[in-house]
Image (cartoon, rainbow, N blue to C red; front, top):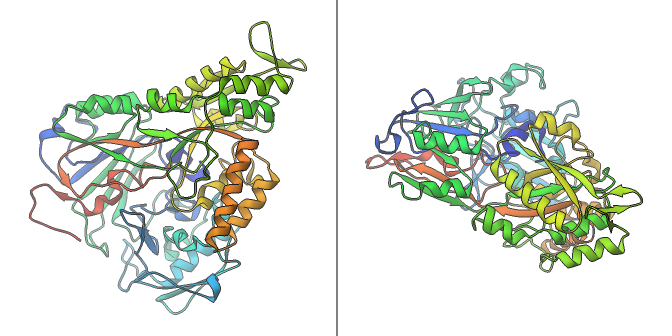
Length: 537
C-alpha cells in the first residue's frame, strides 16, 4: 500500500491465470480445463501497474518478469544470485556490499548488461527529481560505484541488516532509460530488460501481453506467450474462469470453493503477509480520537472475519506482522471485547445518543469508510467492521469507489486498505507508520504520528544486532496497542484455482502485491508441459 507507482496492483486483489492453453479473452467458450498443454498462458489481474519502469518503483521486490535484480528469492524466500554471479561480499562492519556480476548477460535488445546499468538504476532512484515513492527504502545507501564492467560496490551510511534483500530490485538499462526523461519517457510503457519476458503490447485497462525472451541468460521459457487480462471484479473473474476465458485466477475463498470438484483444475494456497486494515485518519475528529481507536481495536471480532469471510483461509491480524512470524510481538493480541470497548468510550466521554450513536461535545461518533469497488473481500471486511463498530455505538458509513475517488479523501476518510511485505519488518512498517511519510501517496495513509514509533522505526533499521532490532519492532507493535492508528483485521491466505496442465507450479510466502510478481506463476519461466520429457533447471 506504500508505493503510488504500483498502487493499483498492490491495493486490490490481483488475479492470475496459469495452466496453459491457447484460450484467450476472445474465446470464452473454450474447454480450457481439458484441452491439453500449449505454450501460452492467460493471466488476469484486477488492477494494472501505473508504470513498468524500475526507476519509478516497478519490480522493487523482484519477480518483475521483464527485468532481473542482482539477487532473487527462491521458493523458500532465500536469496539466490541472479544478475550477480554470487551472493555479495559484506565488509567494513556491514557498510560495504560488493557484487560480482554474471558474465554474458544481455538486455532483450541485445545490448550488454554491465555494472554501469546497476549504478544508473540506483543513482536515478535516489535522485530527488525522480518520482519514486519508495526512495526511503534505500535510505541507508550512501553511494554506489562500478569497478570495471563486472563489479558493483554499494557503500552504506549505516549498517542496514536487510540491504541484500533490497538488491532484488529490477535493473534498468542506462543506454535506453538514461536517454529519456525519467518521469515521462516512453521507457515506463515500453521497457527493455534482462528478464525472461519481453513486453509486446499494453492496452491500458484491457491487457498486457508478454513474449518469451529467447536470449534469456537462464534459458528461454517454455511458456512462450503470457497475457494478463485486467479484470477488476472478483465475481466476474470467477465467471470467466469457469467459462474458459481464463486458465486460472486468484479468488476469494467462497468463490474458490465453487471449483473444488473440478478435476481439471487445482487449488493452490499461499501463506502471506497480506493484511486488511482500516485506516483511522489522524485528521478525522472521530477516527483520530485515541479512545475511539482503542475501542474499535477490541470491538472488532477478527476471528469471526477469518471464519465467515475468509472461511478459515487466514488468521486474525493485530498489526502488519503475522502472528506466526518470528518478528511478531507476543502479548499484543487483542481479544474481542465489546464490553471493554463500551467502557473505553464511556470513560472518554463518548456517551450514547438517542439513536444509539455516541456523542461527545456535540460530535457524533460517525465517519465514512471507503473500500475498493469490485473487491468482494474488502467489501465484506468493511461491512463486518461497520457492524461490530455499531454495537459499540460508533457509526461507520461504508462506501465503494475507485482509487481516483478514494485517494483525495484519505486525509479525513477511513479506507479499507491492504498491505504487507514478507522478509524484514522494516519493509512494511516504515512506509506504513513513519510520520514524515504522512500524505506521501499511499505511504502512511492514516497520517499516523507517534514519536515512540518513529524512534523505534529508526532504531530498527540502523543496526545489524538481531536482539536490538527485535526490541525495536516489539516497541512499534506495543505502541500500536496503546494508540492504534489502524485497525488491523485479518491476514489473508491467497487461493489460486489453476488448470492442471503444467508442472513446476509452486507458491512463495507472498506480499500484498499478488499480481505480476506472486501467485503460482512467480516462476512461470521454469514451467514445463505435463508429460513432457523436457527438463529445465
